[in-house]
Length: 212
Image 1 (cartoon, rainbow, N blue to C red):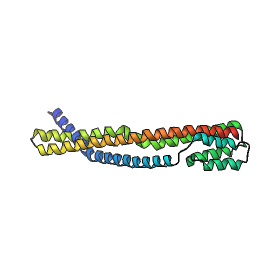
Image 2: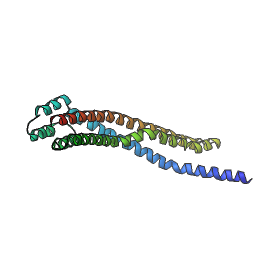
Image 3: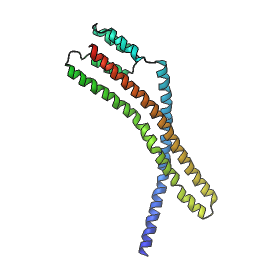
Image 4: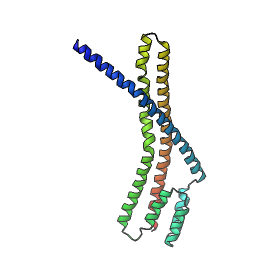
């Protein structure tokens, strides 16, 4: 008798907790979806900018090599005029201005700055990566939580209530998968861009170390 009472209390508590989670889960899913869409818009703008300012790494390296042995200001001018990210320009200018220190220090400085750019790129991808991975799980929660009351309504013959709960469940599943899909595509494309940028930066850094 006591055990049955405890079990009933435990079941009712679990049911109350899970039902309280429904609203936060739906809010989180909506935020994930909106954030993924915003990032998709930013991605399209970034794509347009990259197409407009296409970067030829071979031509840029040749321009750097052409100023070998010349005035330091000419090298800075080539860097400033290059169609590369502003952060990468700062890396190259810092390295170009460190020609009066030891070779080992310059190499360590170059490695550190390239690693920092890699970390910056990872942070940019972090949020969309998280959404792509956990959004389906949150969507599953939003799917399962309404099924309890829905099955209860089915048992009592309340078809209208069952339909409402099923609608919430399906909406949560679709929203979770849509947010994950958009975030995954965004992260995938950006990761390819950033890997290419870091590879180009490593080449440019090596060139600066070679000529100065």
